[in-house]
Image 1 (cartoon, rainbow, N blue to C red):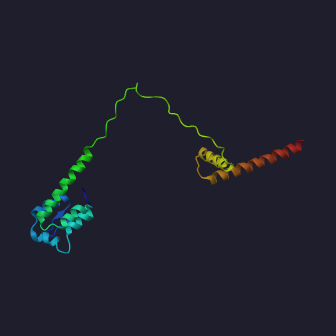
Image 2 (cartoon, rainbow, N blue to C red):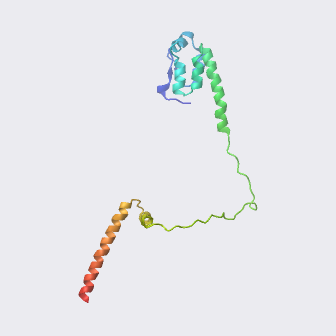
Image 3 (cartoon, rainbow, N blue to C red):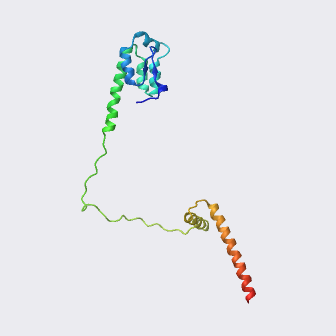
Amino acid sequence: MDIPPEHYFHLQDGTIVMSLEELEKKLKTMKRPVYKHHVTDDRNDFENWILNVFNDPVLAKRLHAAKSAKTAAKLIAERRKNLKPKVTQKLVKRRPRARKTSLAKVDHKPKKVPKTKLRKPSAEQFVEGLIMKEAVATKRTDASHFLRSAAVDFGLGLLVGVLVGIVLGKIV
């Protein structure tokens, strides 16, 4: 698992640890004073790092009880070994193959859909449906646009009607 540089573990001797694997290797060869600098009665830097960076409370709890660097290295190795097969199994697991079926066995009849009674929409539902149809036709989904265009259409129709009435009134 790659971690960002700001989460690297800096040992007292200046060594930088970037992964659990590296920590395990460093703990195997770590001198007692360096280990004791990071693990005291009040704190355990390795436990905190594993809990906060790798989010592994199980390993962190085990490291809390470790009395030496070699014991801590063994605990990390054991935990990594237990975690590895699970990851490998997930990667290896394949999708099940589709079963082969002959065309003769496949039923091509359409399924029966139960009939339901159709209800007449109320006047409000009817107008709402018209608004939505207009909105879909004009690719606009806001009702205010439809109402504005309906008002404009109504006004134009009224104007044309009045003009036709005037013209017809003068002719007759």
